[in-house]
Length: 161
View 1 (cartoon, rainbow, N blue to C red):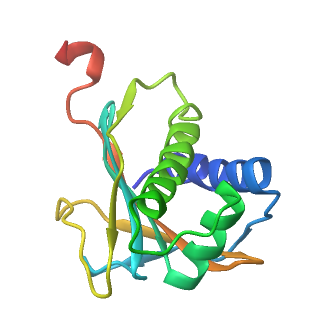
View 2 (tube, rainbow, N blue to C red):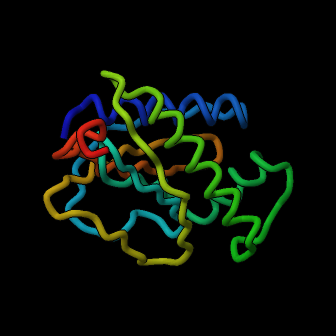
């Protein structure tokens, strides 16, 4: 995977968390993940298409997700509420949208509507040939991880149109 595809997600999560919640994010050492299981039990998932294809997952322990949602919304929601899932989806959307705008070379990239999955042991289907780069993050609310599985599209978006 091109390292230029990882840097935008690091910059975006730091920007979104500090701007929207005044919550600094400390990045850990990225590593390659070999399984389809997500790291934690709350995941916001966004697909990417165009010049870059794949998906991005923000995965949180439920306790971290609950605190982050409360900071983002100013309200405490139960993890099984639709508002909680909406807040995780919107946070994922902001991070992916910010990263999309930072891709070098003026790449044309579209992002999907976010999906949110809550529950221990869930998996995310990804293309087998795309490595999953996991970037651990630490905040005052707890840990989370960004799972990035993206690659350059075989056919650039400008040619596909």
